[in-house]
Image (cartoon, helix red, strand yellow):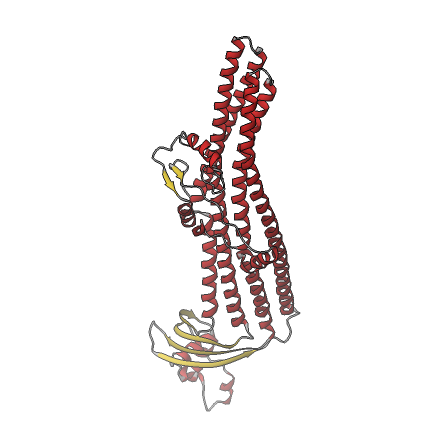
Length: 467
């Protein structure tokens, strides 16, 4: 969290760091985005959300597919056949309404000769090549499927709810990551300000000690120790600047922006605190956490899968209506219709169906176990985040108070060293302690924002409009 913008920062510390903050190098032609704007762009452009949106679309398509099974299935077909098979050739002629007595070999039959009854007619047994064009329209309507269609619809609806909850969970996680990166930039810049202030103090000490060495007041080893600390502050400044650049790079990635795109962040934000007892917050998490909701819907989908598997244990009833046209050439010369009802019931299949039911039931039990584990994990996460949020809040208050004490202590040691009462070790230790307390304030502010956000993430209540 940024020292400059936190509502908890004392006026003394604010006045101390403001002059330093204005020395921050501005990003040339960079677009300054508020936290809400960063979240909006991330939710629109982040590549990771494309997968969750695609899962929702898949689930919605699955529901349309399941519902479509309730309606008649209409198919159109055209089959062209050429054959000299005796049975098929005669059947095609019948279908074309073109069968004649001569197709039975009537020309070889002699009524006056009883032995002609045993003659195999050539026209019937060797019909030659016959062409048939069968044009067909067929409609099939399921009447009773043992609950299969209903189970598929229930499963599809549950999967939609799971995908939608998963999408919400992905969005919540992305908001949390944006907050970490956004506040990480502010925290890094505050650390840069602290490091610059430490460098300024180190430079001043080197200058003062150099004068004292020239005056013979202190030994040269004191100057060397001060110069070592001066280099340390420069290293800390470089590390803080690199941390700031890394945080900006991470924000670029979350927003789906190329790293070369100039980008800057707006004002710092502080995550709102969550109120309520630990048990109340845990109950809210079990109800509102989108990840838990997604698993709960997956359990419902698994239960529907059991219903689908059981459908094969029951009779299947359907209706069929068909219209055919058969012709020796492409056309609609001879037409016929067929209407039928079918009732099938698998009496024995070697326990294939029952095994499928058992497998689906085991899958449901697995999902139920995953749900139980997720509920326990979320409850533990709520308790942890609540404790660490309280710890971070207390730590921030204590760190802010420590800064004033460390500043006063450093001023006293400076005077004592200038008067030859304190040693260089005491002086450097006091300045190091001051630098540390300032850095601790920055870390405490960032930790408070992140832990509060972690609690809201577990509750499923991360809302960028509240910042």
